[in-house]
Amino acid sequence: MGRNVKRRAQPRRPFLGSAMVLSALVLSAMVFSAMVFSGQARAGPLACGDLAGLARPDLRIDRAEAVPAGTLPADNPARAALTGAARAKAALPAHCLVEGTIDPRTGVGGVPYGTGFQLRLPEAWNGRFLFQGGGGLDGVVGEALGAIPVSGATAAPALLRGYAVVSTDSGHRGRDNADAAFGLDQQARIDFAYGAIGTVTREAKALVAARYGRPPAKAYFMGCSNGGRSALMAATRFPTAFDGIVAGAPAFRLSRAALGQIWDTRSFLDAAPKDPEGRPILAEALSPADLTLVADAVLKACDAADGLADGSVEAVSTCRFDPGSLACPGEKTATCLKPAQVEALRRAFEGARDGQGRPVYASWAWDPGIAAPGWRAWKLGTSRTGTANARNVTLGPAAIANYFLTPPDPGFDALRFDFDRDTPRIAETAALNDPTGTFLSTFTARGGRLLVYQGVADPVFSARDLVDHWQELARHNGGAQDLSASARLFLVPGMTHCGGGPALDDFDPLSAIESWVERGEAPDRLIARGTAFPGRTRPLCPFPQEARYQGGEPDRGESFACRAP
Image 1: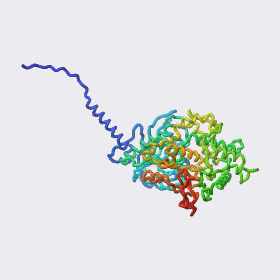
Image 2: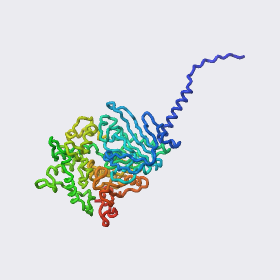
Image 3: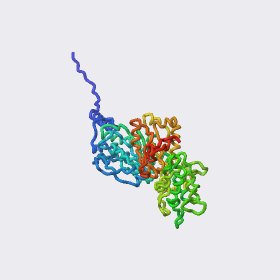
Image 4: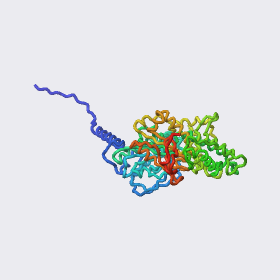
């Protein structure tokens, strides 16, 4: 007997199929995009122009275009003076040029910020990536060529060797490399100090992988001055990002070096004659002839200690000099210095101190490079008026007021800095900015290698300060022998800031770090030459070793051996 069964009405469910499919498609696209950008996808390389399609809200790509072979690099002597970059004279290879901004935002005071970058991707890629350090206070995107950051270098830039090269403004746009206005913005400080290294490295590597269809086999960082500081920051704060790092004249205690600049300027102003308005003329505190007199006296005291009197002080560790030996017994003559000049040199070379005599910044090594134009450019300048043009004056005060002091104090008169009261005010920026760390276990465990070089006559960052730091690194990393397996320091006698001076400033640290990283060939010496001594070669020795003459042809590097002092 059949029954009519009445089914209960089922509640209507919304149809989710289309929404689920759409969500899945969006998610898949996002995952695929992330895979492409992280270098995980291997679908094949993208054409240069197609890289613009990888833009995101937090990654603006303003330019992605092919550059034909034969294009000549621009020349910017003012910027090169701060980065040490040797002028690239050869025509560039065919490459893809990408320019953009990471994390664009509006900052304090309505000022636009973001980390600008330039990436050059050669058609004949060698599988390597190089992050090119900047200089000064950055704020400008330099040409990403990977020029050797030693002004006398003749070795080819990295781009011409087949490297993909990136450069950055470190998170802010300035009028030039001396513009410190960014220091008013908290995030801009972080980006300049270290943050931009991480973000630019991440995005640049992803673009490299997208362009070539594979990530870089090896990654390097190379820079001098602030670029050298950034290089050390890469080793200490981004220990997995780079295989090899070259740090030239690294501003590893930049905050204290800035105070040293004030100390030096005040010391030399005390010895300077005054103009008719009563303003001291900084450049005339010591004339070029006065500094040549000092340089010759340093040579007389220290030159022969390396076994050969040849116009270069190789025995850096044992050089001792007292400017008092040049004090005039009476009136000033061409063969002596006035008491005020002697005192100014003593105060400057002994280093900045507080009211209790405690060091604020390091002392300086005596070197004949004191008479070089590069030394004068920073310490004294060339202005014959009461308006000084020394870089210590034009760069330092605004940086101290806007960046190094926390909170920033734009109206601060740096020349009135109180080394007792005001020094603690730089501590917060120093904690962000100064790569003084000595813990490198991750970097070294994965095979990272660090090559550092420094001019003994550098007027910006004290070679003695770096030597002290290097000895601390050794103490914290198993001793000098263990440290040398992964990190080496090379002092360059006579060299001023990132090149110049009576020095052999033509050497190739990029080839050295590449051989060390990829073939295990640790640099026992760097062979150097330079226009200051035509026809001469000489070894630059890993600290603490110094070059010693062994006999033979004096201008041949083979006549010298690297020996512990």
